[in-house]
Image 1 (cartoon, one colour):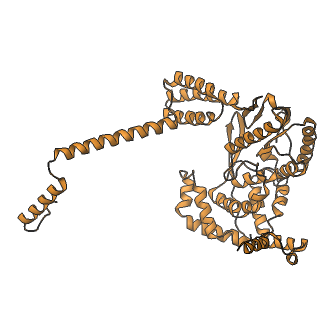
Image 2 (tube, helix red, strand yellow; image 1 turned 45 degrees about the vertical axis):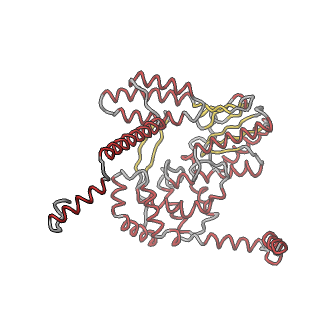
Image 3 (cartoon, rainbow, N blue to C red; image 1 turned 90 degrees about the vertical axis):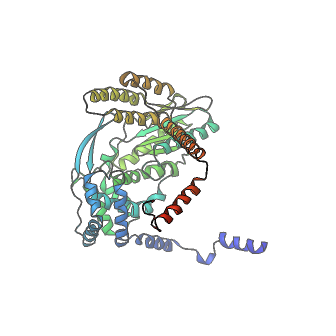
Length: 444
């Protein structure tokens, strides 16, 4: 039996010599794998309906979404017919400006039907093909990743670095200037064409990107918020990620969309690496933000994703929220107070906004920050809002008290009855049945 197990293990681990594939066979296998993602297999009725359901999530209150979902089966049939006939066209976007953290951002919002098509492209074509080509520490816009994942990875990297080198070292921070607005469509399509060979799919992706371009001749820039735009933003800087990880073997590197972070003990190496990154950016038609791109000492602390991160001599990692975020929230509370007094805003909306911000800030080393903001909130609104944990705890206590009251009432009821209530009810039932000649409707 042992010999049989060893034989099976050797059979699994050792590759037979006569079945080795040469380079041509490997290329043929790869091309056949890519051909399985044909236009007809990607755009099916099943995929369209599933994507429509996903697009409805969190925006079902919008009238446009409700109108589309009311006749979703018919709408998906029309979309599929137009796609297969080659007559499908992306509609013009709704353009508006928002101010996020004091910065003006121009938004181009697409229609729900176009979102469904983009969802199919991303979920059933691009992500299955390119997911494994991203480095693990590419933290944005992927499943099971995000801001919290990025901070956890930074914490893990700093802990590993401290065990080897202590808190002496350097940090390279880089940031792309107008990243989404600088993405070149031709370069992005060349990256996608390496794994997508169907011309109809490539033309459809090109048309989806062209909606965001201000100048159709230059074809530069993609919109914010769209799922296809988020994927292209992940893919566009992927060559820089692999240059840092594969060519220069940098262990402590992380990127969140347009923000990059490298930790190393050699300052000169980081200067040389920054030159390589700038050369790669020139090839991709990207530009680094000079104000946000710098090399600093690790023990002095650095900024990453609007947070101040410090590695102390003892190995403790301190993450503090930026002063700008606290200042913005303080100003918001004062503006909300004016709107509440004028009847333009409810106190519940103010409380929800503050509790959300407060819950995010409490994840970091911000005890005194939260305490001071609570005092400001109390001065403006004469009370301190309860956290979600406090509300859940009070609800649990209230339900337990209600159960105790119900149990005590039930015990009082049964102790007041000398006989079994079920037996008493049954005797009354049969006695009423005999007196009424079998008719018990009046009793029931």
